[in-house]
Length: 321
Image (cartoon, rainbow, N blue to C red; front, side, top):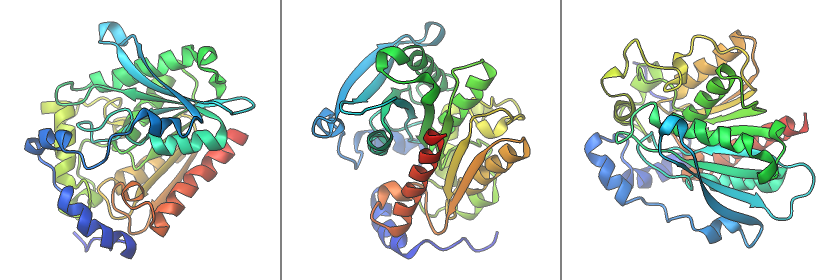
């Protein structure tokens, strides 16, 4: 395999520190400790309220086909005017980590700018809950959200799904499910460096082994927890690993971004290409020198700010259409 692409200089300096708490390779034995010792401070209701600009509630809604109830975090803007939209958020964490409050800060930034209700789903994690439990939780919450648009105060025609990493894979899966199950209608899908291919064998996965954040070993840990013995085999559902979908036609417009120096680079580029080949609409960004999750971990870096600005520009066009 050829020499890996270099990290952006600003990001490389931060990566040396990040690696002390989050090594590139995560094994199954490390999951319990990571869940207990997360380096991020908990996100409080006061954080989410943003000095009274949002109301915050947690609502339990029915799970799918007898599954346990699903908890939704619902943040509604207090002073927004005009017709509201909604971003339905699926958090990251490799299918093994995280909660519904992880990653919501960026969703609230969008909500303030575009007048959006934010709904973030608390799906069950692997390995305790393997596929299809996590995506079924996300689907149940999405269907409930769309059916209760009037109560939540948004136009169901302005509903998007969004997520990063594993959450990006879940968002992509929801777009496939919505197409295959005749709704809810989605205006768009925001897929931020999505985790979509359990086969874990692309050139970038091999090239970046042992480097950056969430390398090939970590990826095997996440997919193995979700799929067990089925991982990498012939019978994996596209609702678990969207790269397995054979038909990417008739999907809502997609924004896909990924970094050049991360495991998911090639699977995400291929997914965007296949959407175009199927006649669909996708905007793709590959951020040079970025590692996985770079914009959240090093938000002050110039490339991080540009990545987040590109998402805002796409949303601006989407909601203006």
